[in-house]
Length: 422
Length: 215
Image 1: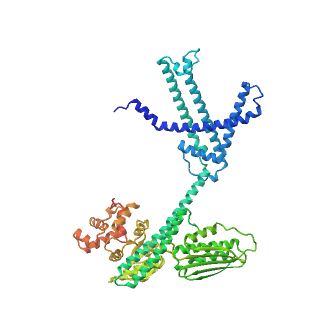
Image 2: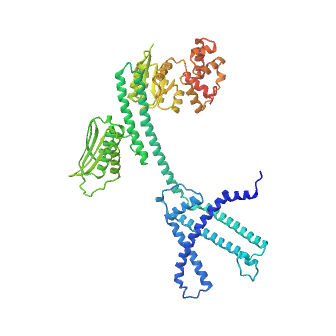
């Protein structure tokens, strides 16, 4: 079936081009509106010294003031473009109206060069809009003057009903159509120019892109670390329990003692895998990344912690009562981090003397106490991020943490239940 | 005759379970346990087991390097079965190329583990022909060899049936020849392909394009 011309015109109206022109038109209209505001402010700035009300307003003077007002508006627009909030607003506008989306760049690190480019873009946006708005007004006035022109030099009546015949009406309609098409082309061209310039002027610089890339890479690394952690702990635990269950089933009739042992061990392995899972899932929920420095520290590796701080000049007397190897993995890991943080703090803020570290593991809980002499320098140190994050980790496992001065000593104590809270 | 097995895994619990499962069989006996690759190499030399059941990931020396080392040093090496947690591991293919007899997933059922040890000890059939086909399809040939020109027609037939996982007696039945003749053919084709065992021969057949892995 052949398409009718009106149908294709309808398609043109709804087409991608029309949609894009409309969006570009909106962008320019926004620019024009802002330009109006800047022009008013600029005019107010430059007109005040001239005292126009006292001087005769000659054509030359008006022209001069107008030029100065335009220049002042440009300067104002440029200054506004330097403001980061304006740049962010522009970014949002071009995302919607030009469908240009830039890689997200942390806004805190926006450099001066980027702000200068944003200023240039803002000026361009505003004045392109203004230019198109002026063209729009001119076109309107041309169309409106057609009836006057048709009715001859004597006609004062500008209303369309002064048209006298179909020919006149067609002339008016033709002019209007040409005007609208010309405006569309102008909007298209101005929009194309904006399209070309938006990337170099508003986009992130290569340094910012690099910084963003680094962030993304760090995020990916953290994710892969997490997935490796799940893989290593949970995958491994599932495999072991599966083998234990298989072996137990096979020897059910012949070796009940072995079966009992396996069942016990299955519970233990599953429990520790669950607490590992809790740990990883809580990291995922917080969006925080696991500490890359100590991926698998456990309390059995206490010597690894004490060795370096002793080398760093600290005297540590430590006692461990109970079997650290028996601890659930998550508890052991948090305990390790607590000791690590405590010793680091002593190294950083503590006074001279012996640091006592006591780890006690009983049937239900683990207690870690770290006591060290206060610094003679009495300046109180505000609790840092280390202590806060430590407290969160301890609370997450159902334990509690106390820290504070006690006489001339600083005491840090935590208690963690061995059973994982449900 | 009992099959003597050495179990190597860094996880004590897995060693215990494997030992229990295998020792419960009348014809299988675990004669030693190793907790890393270095110990596995040492036990393979000292205890001369028929089968070495070994984890791929181990401290000090991993299962792959241990496999290569044992097959290099020992004149009569044990059949080596590698244990992995996850299937479709590229290590598996490397291990098989290096001369491991087969691999086992740790999630396999105890019956499968026992069966694999028995089959590996006998050595007259290929373990996991389907997996080897898949792996060969994934890690495409690197060394084109004109196998068809090296082998006689009969040897080529035997190689094809071997790749399908048939035992010596099944091959003998298919080709209307005796088991002794099958063994002679296999011995000859292993020499010609410079392969240590059936697995290596079949991998060579895939890699040369003599057999195509198919979809």
